[in-house]
Image (cartoon, rainbow, N blue to C red; front, top):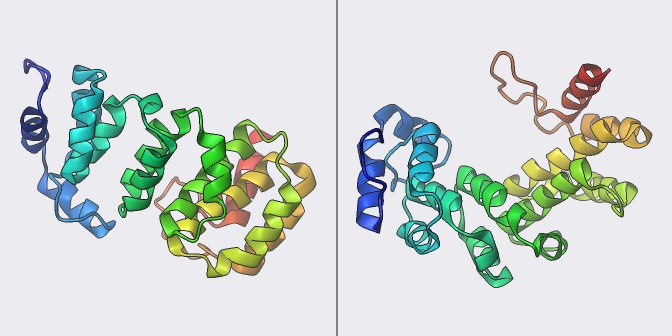
Length: 228
């Protein structure tokens, strides 16, 4: 982006993204489930383009509607979260199929929205895989940042009862909740560890060197030891 004018239109933004595309990134994204409509832009380059644009809600809406993976990621960085209605966010969250977009939408838009608690409560009861994923993601945030009022025993009951049969997208964020409760609450740690062992989910998940396994018992014990 050095020396380039910030994109002002959809065509300019797409061109800027295309110029930053990499074949290897496209291949990696495809292996992780990304659709074909992508340029393969590195995350740092998307953030640099967003920094040059700053906030441009209307352009963000156009980028999101384009269906291009990189454009949708960029959109989450330049829109104004408060300008979306609850119905808008539900429509967006339910339409996403690529988890990286779901995560950026969650971090940059949904978690910044004043109605996120109402959405969390509704989505926790949803049968839609991506809305359930979003609901459990919001719950994971509450577990670590604002646990007051949450019933950890009830959440652990649900995870023990439902997680094994939940759709894969929801399983992932349910697992964040399971690990989060084990990490944050000494009172509930033993039960979280036992549920993780019983379910066995992500036990053999491939984990890069230096990273912590998403298998809940390993994750919980590693984080508790780190804090000791």
